[in-house]
Length: 613
Image 1 (cartoon, one colour):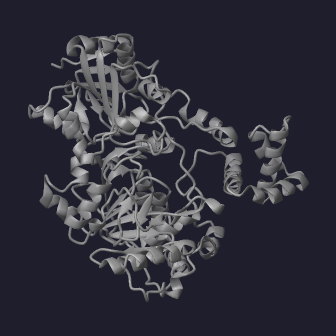
Image 2 (cartoon, rainbow, N blue to C red):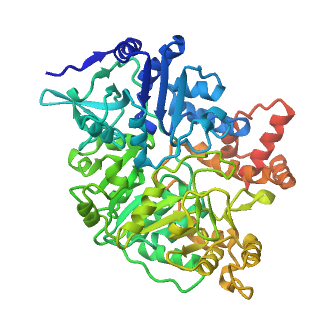
């Protein structure tokens, strides 16, 4: 008979935990979506009110509503209200952000929401650098005594079952450690009605949990970040990446515009093969090969189950099964539509999407023979912020020591790419960042911090092409990286390489690579864009029609802000633009219809001019 205790009052649950554990609580919360917010907040409030209570929180990817200001806030705040209305903010995050975290409470993360904690000294000091697969060991080393996780619930033949759903990643490994006597902790569940019930290893009986919190009054909508538009540079990266994927292989994709671009490119390659090959020919600086469709199809083995996998399955790209599954994933986070599709999916189809421990997805050891048999021709697609001419990749932090995000599973997948026969690691890097006079190269001669060292260099893809670096000499690596760098920075980079005698003094960048410019990419992909093959939002959007018209106009204004003089023609167009119903809808949506101040009137004119463009 289950000894699980049930609560509908989170504060009483926090009291019960403190009574059972004592004065020192070490609370582990899953990465991302799977945090039991109500339970975590109750435990936090109790510790904040009782300074003799010591609370240590170990987690990763604390999700927060974006904080924006100015013109951007006028656009995005109503969208955020729609998406995050009712989502309870994690109180420890609010205290960290405001610098008011009590001295008896410590928060450590091993992966940050990208860029979110650059300005927090306390968060930066308490960051723990870890591979995803090693994080559970660090949890054990801290003698975790409480794990609080969001779960889905259902009753099967009279038996109540709970699903770890979005976060089997570390919890399954920790439960295994508890079963082996290596850990002793309370497992606390918070039931959420929106969370999809995922079958497989995370489908647990009630007896697996010590406490269950369930209250319809505090049930909350899942965190669902709006999908970002996929710009042409990301599509170019995605198209190049799609040429590297072999039929009958294995696929891992990371989050972001480049991942969405790659997924859409794979669907185009399979569904609109002629058009795909035309785009590759237009982008190519040499005579390109032709790339076929996916007759056998791919199998997914991805740390993050990104929502584009559902579209890849529907398109017939991901259709090769391994161990009874089309996809093995460790965690997921996505749009409201993604969660709804999973909830409403036919159970037989959902059974092919299996959530596993992160040690299963991100590592080979433990059932290595079957993993090797499944992960044939694997391609691991991830993102980097910068890369060096010698092939090292910067993905998680700055040379100052400040942490942008985290290593996560990137190093795991690079290691797998070298450990598996026929596998490759593909790191996607935008060739530049910024705009106008603030444009800078993301290809550097060197950088004071790296995530992936040069001795594990493999394939780096920019919008300008593919640099295959594995097993090559430093000189050949430099030449390959120069070929995919933006031409505005190529000569400076080449000069640095020559100054250190790492490339021949006689080397010149081949002529076909000297036109690596945004204009060339735009011209190459313009026909496909005009045909609707490269939509801004290939996998759906939470923005309405008016907001979709606003996005490109606001993007143009942001780019021109880097060079304020370029705003003058936009302003003049806005002041002379004739009345337009669609433009006025956009102006009304931004709150400028009845602009009173001079500043707002200028903004209205700039927006009208950008919309006219």
